[in-house]
Image 1 (cartoon, protein in one colour):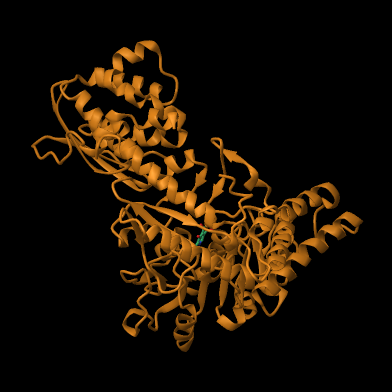
Image 2 (cartoon, protein in one colour; image 1 turned 90 degrees about the vertical axis):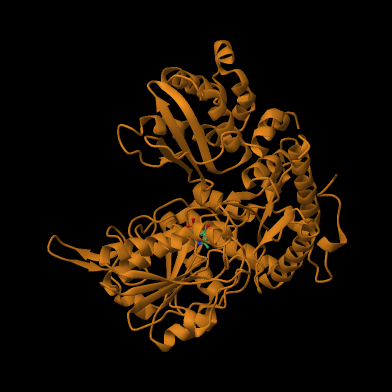
Length: 424
Length: 153
Ligand SMILES: Cc1ncc(COP(=O)(O)O)c(C=O)c1O
């Protein structure tokens, strides 16, 4: 099957969207796995990189490599400019008020840990409470658990229902005078639910409780406006947004960031140092100790440029129609069980195949060149909620096609054949 | 499809579908250990009843993929009635087999367990096949000291 040359009508829309053209930007998609064309459906784990990003990283090392904020020489000035330009691109991307509110970190995980350390340790005390949801990624659970352990504080959890939506009636919003922070995922990485975070943020703000939003799975899929949402912190990872690994963003309201002590000490985050006293640098540098991931930040800037060039207003409807198609195809077969039916979702779909463990499904699909994620997706509480230890998860990007979903369904049928050899 | 066939051999599918020695052993003086694969969240418990140096009875329970379930099933069927020393030898041969370092001699020792020879072509699945064995090793020691949960990490 000549998947890539088989231009489907569905892949080219009236708006001028041409998925086959877009795929040419992603060199990795041309390769074969076990002799079959690669079908990459594991985008929630990490997205592939367009050559525009790869070239931006390369260009940094080939032409501009230097440390930033330090030298007066040309290369350092170029590198500093590229780094700070990327900060401005991120600011615009999420519509933050000021560049001072954009802190570069290693990824969503480090951003959450930064807030747990710098904000949490100075704000949360014994018997205080932090509110999470039951669909958090482990990286938005463990840092808070560690903080609670240290301070003698407690976690409260917003439950979810059978469909995989949060139960947001008043009874289930466990806010009280001891609540010091809400940490909530915008989108579930395990079942794709888009949470109505505005509602939670508004309810929390009525009680002056700050809210951290884990945007690792929302930033790649639709437009996020942190001022409109009103969240106090918003975190995401560059690598899920078509950028390099090892770079991510913490957005924080300036007033909160000003009050927080530094996260790590070192170079760049200081204004002056003597053995008696250190004066910390201003925002955002106060939170960027040491030489940062300069090439990664530059690459993230290029990734944001790339997403703009494709256009989120194009990406969103295309991904939505592709998700709809995938859901319909999978629902055709009684031996496939979809996990969660959230009201609003992104292109992340969990399912199980009757009688075949997700790991076995994953191995068989890989032989067909198809990459999906199998396991608990770092969200064991979600698995527990559905009474499972693992699921198969496909997660689509705007370079995926209907043909690839057809191939996935074909490979799932093959898995059934492999397992029915013994007449089961 | 050939590597897949080699992995999911008839015997493995059969033991996955109808695992032998599946269940919970309740007996005074039994030894048990729990195994956990953090990569996939799979859990398994091995229950043993030893008589002197012999494995008198062995059962397992838990959830897992076809490879780990079949491995636990075939393992229990193979070591039942064996001495502890020969069980250790068997484990060593099995480990060499699934990591692609098996010898001809191992083939004789392993008998039916040789159906796991395909696992070595799937590095991400080696832990699935070895988890039951690591858990068994922990259960054998369980008498001396309480065993922590065995993890494949
Ligand atoms: C919802 C969510 N939060 C946080 C993370 C952690 O991101 P990273 O590993 O890039 O720090 C992920 C990644 O899988 C995620 O899906």
